[in-house]
Image (cartoon, rainbow, N blue to C red; front, top):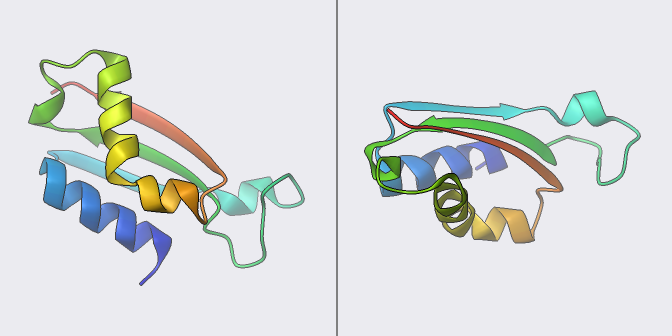
Length: 86
């Protein structure tokens, strides 16, 4: 399973988002730090979920980071995260 698929599966299972976009932007970072052949190092996530309604922006980001901790500790070099309150 790809890193993108793992992220989508974990976030969907834990947060049941109304919007989830996981975009592999690795190719845009070719030659930069952390880039590797084959991609899956630089991601952008746009997510809206009911769980964010009562959370601050920092708390919502921490929640997402906790859910995908394994990927952040491993193959992901950079993450752009956009949390949308529905």
